[in-house]
Amino acid sequence: MRWSLVLLVTIGVVMVLVLIVGGLRLESAASTERFIKKWFRNDNGTLATYIVDGDVVDNDLVKGREALAETIGLWMEYALEKKDRDLFDESYTLLQQYFLQEDGHIPWKLTESGDYHVHTNALVDDLRIVSGLYRAYEIWGVEGYRQAGDQIGRYLDNCCKNGSIFADFYERKHNYVSDTITLSYIEPQSLMALRTREVLETESVTNTLDLLKNAPQENGFYPKSYHITLAHYEFEEQVNMIDQGLVVFYQSLLGNQSEEYHQFIKQEMDRHGRVYGVYNRLTKEPAVNYESPAVYGILIWYSLEIGDASLAKDLYERMVRFKNKNPISRYAGGYTVDSTGNTHIFDNLVPLLAEVKLLQQAKQ
View 1 (cartoon, helix red, strand yellow):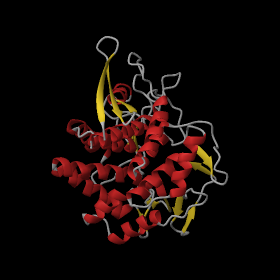
View 2 (tube, one colour):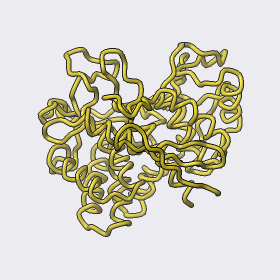
View 3 (cartoon, helix red, strand yellow):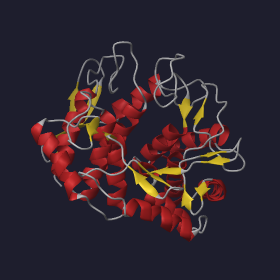
């Protein structure tokens, strides 16, 4: 693919790299990386969930400067995409120092100071971290990465299964395992890697992946979850597009493609020039009037995986409308920073990953 670099000199010594790829202007992901490092770093190096501290708990039961296992997994993935060994090792050190317990348990969130008061893991976070550790081992050959991945995998195999199916979480204080598996939690590459390394039992991995592969669609949308003990899929009336985007992305990694969902996203971009955050499952009409840069980021991952470069371009152009592109702004590079100077790290990390994936593909 033809590409060229254009160097733009702005005020003072501020420079922004722009990559032209088949007519698509891709800003340097470095501005968002700098934004995250500047505004989300806690004193101990962990990455906070919000810029602004506070006691208000959001819908995911997270507040202020608490740090998530989800975040460290995404940050690892970003470091791997750009082949940044130093950045990955920073995350690995934080994982070892604050998150990873001796038995392989990873609490899904920490306080700002690095303590944890929850005794629950999250399967999706653990699998993303395992994937990062194994990929890093393949690239740099550090045995500690592989050992940590195996350690987490053994914990999942021992604790995070309901029967022969992996479940959303395990609460170890009360020895309780979830009776559901959210489909967007089933990250296939990590499960298959753990099976290949014989850390996880083949039966459990196969059964869990089959739930993803064989998931039915209603009106083009996938179920939210599968109830393990009742043995049925569960749909939601209001469809969250982050969940749906992850499910179709994971399906594409398995070689499956939902043409109905693909056409729906293309039609939304053609009809509205945007994809909303939530849709009514029956009518396929938007249920909210907001958009999310994280939704666009995940849909870019998906579009790249299925080879639809045109859709990825359209999604990218809409996504970066939510990015602060003013090089002299204190929030330069940040996505969806509101009037109080606040934003969620997920809405920055996912678009950051989408940008770097686009850049990496352009170099191939």
